Length: 152
Image (cartoon, rainbow, N blue to C red; front, side, top):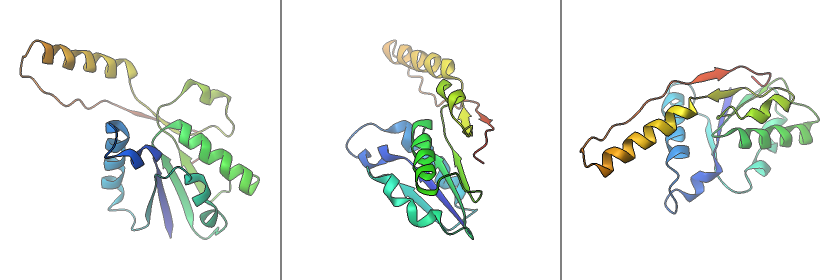
């Protein structure tokens, strides 16, 4: 049996703040995982780290954490290492954003990279279209790359 976690504390603000990016990542993850597993747990509360412990000791269950940002993945990594003394072989962790600080982290975190410059360019183009009333509304899909690390 596999347990998949999606770690995204900003989701707790869904109806209170603009959390479009984390919410879109959550929707994509949920859609992709619906055909793979029935055991999907979303960690969105402030104390999400305290909810991990029961899942870490049962080595019969492969456990994976996909985090909506590298910061949350680093929190998960440190909590597991503190609780277990190491990252157990049945646990996988993956972040999102490919932060430059990751080169100093061991074990090396697996993460997702995307073209930040394109995000800015598309945002400016969209803003200019709105200012100029072109009526053009467009969704942009950006390429991404999985950066392999030692946590999967």
